[in-house]
Length: 376
Image (cartoon, rainbow, N blue to C red; front, top):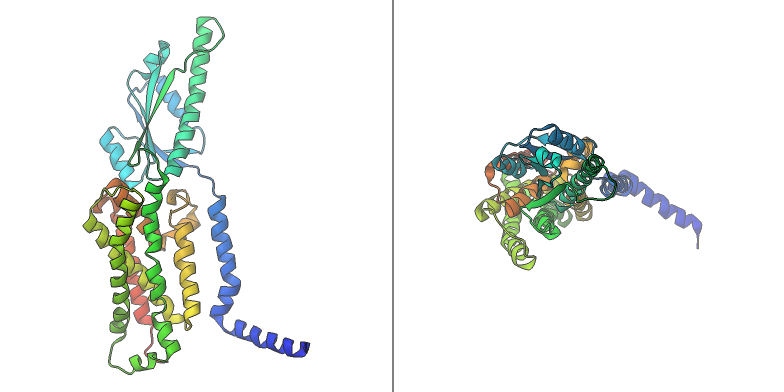
């Protein structure tokens, strides 16, 4: 083995890596980004879950009990609904994940040594967060109940055990059995629908590698016409798979679909337009198909799994991660898909996320048209 020749090849390959910005970023920067994203995804602790409080008793004991629930950072009181209609509105919009209802007579029953009932309604669309809320509400309730129990025993003048003075009744909404598939499968739709976008990222790169881009440039086709013509076939192909995905979710995984099929198809179309606008934007700058597919995997798959709310509830992300997640269309569609599937949400409840999808798609489509040059 001639080491001089080996070193020559090494030097040549190093020049190739450092001069090709795309290769350099994929080799050096991408592992760091994956490490940051995956490290954050697997090290996060669920806390600060938003809950609502409906105190129908309004006595010192009910306020003391609710103060105990709000005594740690595990739960955060976000709203004070006054009726079940308010509870449904707050949960439909995702403002709260659980609501604690203290009925009238709570304080009277405790003072009389009777068992007082407390109802907890939880949003079952995200079993992880629902389980966290149930666990901590239950722990705070047990602590408060133990204090009341000790006071009852002291007043009675003896020590021993007695029945718990609080009967905590749980009522999950939207997903009564708290099945993970009911939450996971609708969210996965957003991930699998990003696969056509990965194929779309090769649209211009393939033309460059095959040498056919020159022929397109020589035609009188405008930039916006060329980009739109590249985009639409991929969107149509993606739309063909959506009914099959919905059938698989409902009949294959027994996930109930409670919303409007027409609305879901329309918003899926908007989502495909948004993701594929990003994919075509990528292909404007990346010349090789291999680099384009790697970049699209980084953007759609990794961010889709770890930043979209699929594994980590979006409400629990830090400010910087949340800002990054908000720039990704998958984040918004995961929320849309879960709400339509499990809650039967309409346009009013998800309008913010629909608007975000439209803005992202239009911005990247406009940027693609502006940045694409009809020259080699």
